[in-house]
Length: 372
Ligand code: BGC
Image (tube, rainbow, N blue to C red):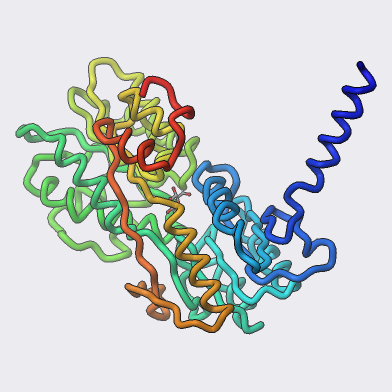
């Protein structure tokens, strides 16, 4: 019996080694190209440390199942030097298309330039590489509309009072998206800050600029510096802690949190305060945040359907490889050129529509959650 079990175990292990070695297996390092083959499409994602990008990898794998093109996915682990190495590795493997989400938009310029010089088509994926003409296409969600959805949600929770506490938080200043999200939120929140409905509790710069409907990039940068989370939950936590100490919340408390990972960290800090009612935003529809929404903790998220983004990126890559015309519907300026873009729409998710938008739409399986 023991022997039988052992044979079974060994068989499963051996099979496990080979499963996923097919020509379209996309992992960080282990594809057939490692055994001497070449790669057509290289994909570089910023970090495995956030569910957002792990999901992108999974959705890429799913979408790539039926293609004949060879693909490899690498992660940069929040490190621009590693990202550059990843680009070099993929260049050496003969890629013709590079799909890249930069860790730091400006720092990635040199890496994509190296790819471009080899005749590789460069697709910025979700985050724009800035300060270079070496980007061919940008596949993105409409990030200004993400910020607007967050701002609108907070405005919709107002019930006629004035002087409502508003705490602002933002993403990493190295990510162009952090500016677009903030710009969108400011579009909606600023009139309500200017007329005294909201009082910004944690950013003197936001208070200083409260009468400006449109902020320059530098002005946004000055605000973001005071409220950045660097996209890290631990930074969000300590910032929330110190902002709460400096300006304690009371009663209805409105919080602009830039994404789900930071929203959960910020919520947990505010939730330690007695007698307050928290309204807090997010984005990405990460599984733990969907649970927070079901549990009445996080108030909303913005669903950015990664399946659409992946389909847009692969569609573009395949069009390039097959010499077809690439369809775009927008342009984004990266400081040097207007990059042709595919701009994808987003959906607001709250406790009221979570079942419909997340479960019934097939985005996640109900078994991932409790209390639905
Ligand atoms: C992405 C967000 C993500 C954030 C942190 C942004 O560029 O658009 O979806 O939450 O980076 O990784």
